[in-house]
Image 1 (tube, rainbow, N blue to C red):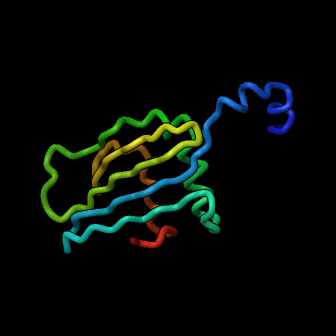
Image 2: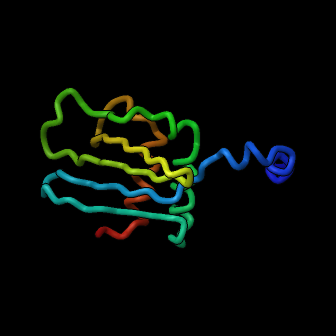
Length: 120
């Protein structure tokens, strides 16, 4: 069905940017350590492909840039998620552990990338 839609409207298909890469910088926590996790289109893992697909959805593309608590105290991890798209645009979203109202799609992308990507 998707093939039929693309063939019927190739201009719409060309306008849709796909996700080329996602990097997650995790910092803070009890140890205060900073780690960078990343996946891209060459990462051979189903979870990486899922993260790249989720980051291309309208739910992810329309996320606010910041989901932070009123009190960032006390050994929480901070996450800076940078997503690069095929149209040359980037999206950066920052959040921390345990922030009420953080969209599930953001938490899922963070979880997938930090579980697949090798810390640098």
